[in-house]
Image (tube, rainbow, N blue to C red):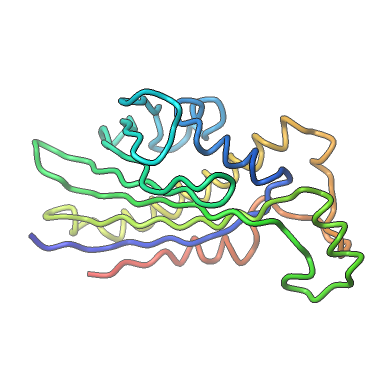
Length: 203
């Protein structure tokens, strides 16, 4: 059975410590409290006992159908990855593999800022969220890979924006924070948005 792969990559800066970002991302049933509602997301239901850890299973109920999933990487405050499969009429049509890598935000890491500026960045407790997602399409779903690429880009970008807004709302005094270099941190970087729009497919 032939396959086609769609891949998305982006990043955002969240004004919260990595431990809090990780806790939000691992609270799968809690996604209903902050995830955007104008896409395919419905709700997530755990099918194995909590807490969420490597090997945890779940069902991601979406407008496309139910994705049966598993947590495949669970490295607290650092890395999180999932693998989930959508079946139609008993046959797999999509396997999705979203993942997150978290690291402390430091202005000096990319802009070679002064030591003082870097220290201020770490003191803020911000987190860079690197997000990648792959969707492997099977059988007739391959015919819709352009539409799937658009949908993956839209859904994953909105997920990052929703995550940043939700955590900022829980700690509003940080919402107006500025980068140590003086510029305002955007919910999703321009580079990240561009990467999202260029989600590519491979036959």
